[in-house]
Amino acid sequence: MCKNTLLPVNTTLNCGGKLLDLTKPAIMGILNVTPDSFYDGGRYLSGQAYLHRAEQLLAEGASVIDIGGMSTRPGAGIISTDEELKRVMPVVEAVCQRFPDAIVSIDTVREQVATAAVQAGAGMVNDVSAGNLDAGLLPAVAKLQVPYVLMHMQGTPQTMQQNPQYQQVTEEVMQFIIAKLAFLRSLGITDIVLDPGLGFGKTVQQNYRLLKDLPVFALAGLPVLVGLSRKSMVCRVLGISPADALNGSTALHMLALLNGASLLRVHDVKEAKEVIALFDQYRTV
Image (cartoon, rainbow, N blue to C red; front, top):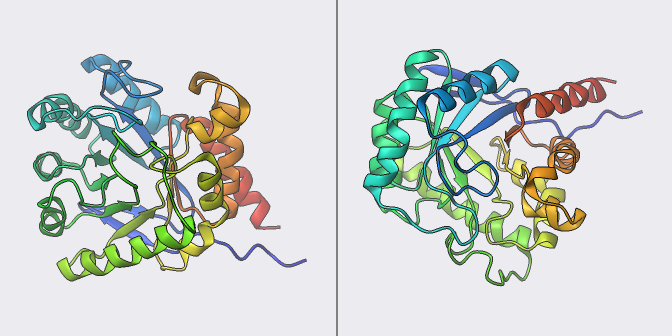
């Protein structure tokens, strides 16, 4: 019997002097310090809460902690730069100090926030806007010399789920990524992770089309991140709320791995780690 040939891209990323090995699938654990995120908004706003959450993510097997201070759920409002800095910087500083060996990612669309976070110890920039909401962000990432997560989003968080339209969603998302990759490389950014942006300006059907077509994105020769944890592509199909979407998310994480995902961005690290262990066993048979 033939082995599955859709293996994760063999890539090692230099995250501010800390190596992230993606030759095997890894986990990015979500640490939202927001009052309004769609699932865990308001849970980790105090120092004790966010440090406990970071400790839990690492203990359960996260390779990266992704810290975000502005919700990007559909319809979410834009907060000021000062407010975002006020939310994320104490968290980045505290997590980097308490867990000096951890890889921290800053989830932001802003140059000022990315720069401050990396200077405080973050080693990766995760940008849902692909640089389209702050012209200074991508040149700043080039100067900071940290890996960059390039994600596709149609519109903005405020408008993205207002009847998203594509002729061929996979082809159009891939064309967008190819064009952005050329620009990133012209700036000198070479450590790049691709994210097709499930839930960001896509219908449920379009999300599943992209999930099925993940091997197309792996053809770029870069690791692929999938962020579907507890999102509407689970909830709407099953008729449940995000609070009840762990099992559905876990099932889709296995499909993502089978289709070539290298990095899973999740709320539930323990369960994702178990999926990866089962996937590793499956693909070695």
